[in-house]
Length: 184
Image (tube, rainbow, N blue to C red; front, side, top):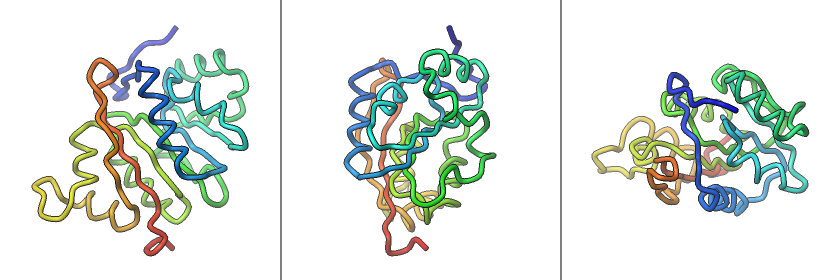
């Protein structure tokens, strides 16, 4: 089947209810173009491919996960970008939305990449380590408020959505969406 590669910061969401909850949070804001970052074993992908009227693309670095995704969902074959999110160009022309269960070791770098695309990103729902999510959502005066807090909040409204228990994957979900006032 497939293996977990800690060297790539991989972890897999195992709780189907949490996957549905994340997708529901994503769907609160309308979109037609969607980029999934790090689909891995496909916990979110299995729900995303069912969204009608949505052009879905997924970026995955791991060869083994690419093979698994293509075998499990053959309709994804032309929608998979076999690369690191940090190395790709914008995947769509115009506005798009981003979702992901982000790898531990590059989650901050992914956020900085999203800042490069801030004019095009409508909404982003991501699962991060608790510490990363707390820093992104921290308000001024909070002890974890810092550069990433300031930069992300300058261009996105950030909402810390919910915590995900260790038995599910040990991650935390936040949503950001374009403020519209500062972007562009």
